[in-house]
Length: 437
Image 1 (cartoon, rainbow, N blue to C red):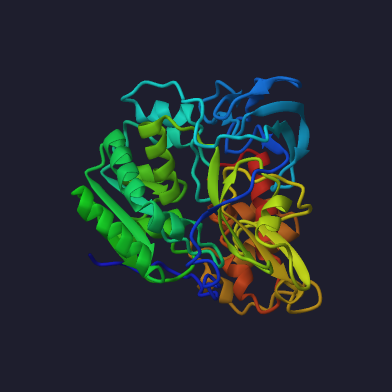
Image 2: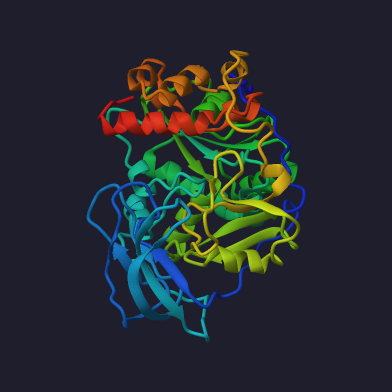
């Protein structure tokens, strides 16, 4: 099929070679588990357990009746030692369930979810499945698209365009059959007649594994290699590349008949339907300045300090540690924060890699590079300039709410202005004012 090139984008070094060939290994059982009640977009859960309670692996420990939410399950059997606020990778302090795991943990068993056998959306909700590409939007909501916007095309996102990250790459290689089975379940649930898996062409082994799984399953699924280009995996850019459809400003992909899910999310849905397994663990890449970079199957709630230790510990002159990828991830203020559902990677950058190219924030020189790089066809310099001056009307006028915060503008800015941070502040101000996209 013909692949279209989206506007803008950048080509940062992918830095994936250290972990792309590393098979997924299970991370060691931590001495403590800290489960935030908000690991998803939407309403936070309410704790369903109290200090001193015993919990079993797979047991629901947090839930809420709100539509846009997802329950939280214990990934271990053990004792609740506290229910109190703790710091999370986002920098927020939220209510958490603190668990001391039993030493003789059986990770092959769990409490199965309770949901109707033929309702994939209900199963995804009961299992606490969210988007594992990083956004962490509750999957059950996406599996019930608006009736006015029927879905004809399902896209599975296997691009993984962020530098360093290879967790999706390994999932596609090691669990290709589950990716294909999950795609079929999602397509059946939403009525999609066409299913396409998009994978950047720097992952030929993943494409080969998927094509073999498709052939063996006899599935009607297209596997498409895409040019390696950031942010190829962004939802609107991926839709355009694979279908030629343009999602209108302020609209969702369902408005053009498309649904997008991450390949890891497809595996989680398959496991929830086939085995009634809740989302209690995920694959995380640990890369950069660590002794043994790799991909790990990590219990949710595992402290990031434990995960770095599993990767051999820090090496060299560390400057910054990021949860997620270096383009869109969150810099961590502390390693005493837990892995959550949206944690795709932990990237350790050296002091040299994280140092600014110039001393301090410099004035915009109107070179236009940020405009050329912006995949959303925005004027980042103008949005940031207005946000810097707290002129929120200008942020709205230049469509600041349409920014996807990919970081391309900051990456190419020769004066290293904090464009993304300024735009984020402007978006936050507009949302507080109740401005819609």
